Image (cartoon, rainbow, N blue to C red):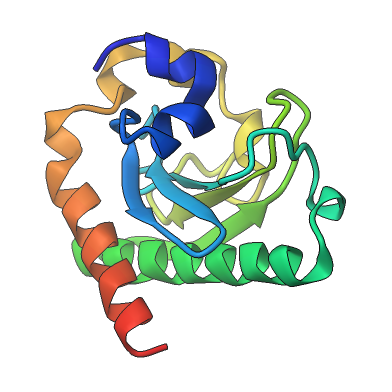
Length: 159
């Protein structure tokens, strides 16, 4: 993976150059997270780079984004449940504090997480989890990527 796509994640996705894209959805792109210390972490990116917050979208597009977020969350839940018996749940967040574009985080949560963190927001994990090479997205996550993508396909075919 090259670094340049990270400077314009949405533009790169629109050009077919963002390697984290799992599927194109109605309102944006389902992508797998750059870090995988919680395996299955995914993000829904809007397909409109200038949109900074959910309220910037017209109501119909806003509802479409929320529906896509729900669909990605269910796909992550199904894939993680199948791949890890210690899967617990997913947490959903639309924050927008660090990146200036609309996106939604889908965080799988597991029984094997440290006791002091399992019931808390993922942002309380130590900073080194975000930069540790062990958790960097790579070929070791191909099975997970395929599982989430397949679940998205199943959910969209039954919609």
